Image (cartoon, rainbow, N blue to C red; front, side, top):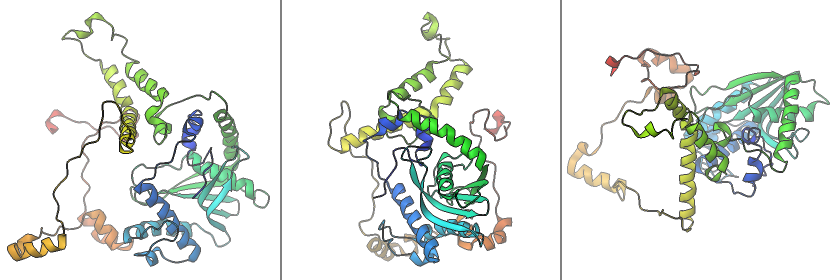
Length: 379
């Protein structure tokens, strides 16, 4: 089992923002999931491919030795995309390490982590992080996980390497166009940031550390469903602009929420929705474990009928219906076709693809996407 630091690099987005989350999470178990196990397997496959100079395709249909994961073609293709980027980022004279343990305890007490790929060439250090998930995009800009890895690697290399620039790349092959995103920071600015991190880390270990709930730090926090600070924040956020809720006129037919009040509720929606979902998951887990929870129980959900043996059903239906027993084949989607053809032949189908405008969607006013004009006639 891989050891985790109390103030880990991967959890830094949480403890840097909410110091009290460190003590609050202490002793709570990590929840395993299919996606977490898949990510672990993807990292294992990447390390094997990079250290043995073998293509990931060599592992299709085989079980990885550590995780026991059976590699399919899809995983091999996506991980190879990352492997190719790492290899292309290595100059001939470079030092390259994979799954490198780095110690950043000069800034964070007992702080350490594992950097997916670390490349040092001349005065440049390159930290590369593989994110195999396909749900939440991660930016390399001011990425605290990558910056902590860089601090740790710098501490271990400063005696023999004159590092002046740090590059941080996040590679999420299954999100967007699959290409990595890279950001640069000078070593001087990284060290300044490290001094701020030192202060935040000390605050995390102080008695009575402050709870500071928010969208980013609460997203994966294990305390989320039972956090009183988050419950108070959601209440305050909703009621902040509702100064007239106690007015005697509030229950009249003409009483309406103002645009400002509606906007306040909308801004709070993502955090409140994720908090409610975490509470639902928390109660479900307790009931599934055999506990009693007041007012709730587990019941059988809706299920669709299915064939007991699909091959046997296909044979029987073909005898009765002939070719009509099988649904007609569908042409590949543009994304599926591009993946099947490979990057070298994508241009061959470019003239066959169109990307229509997406349906209008709501966004906060400072969203970088341009505003569009929508008329009632559009609907």
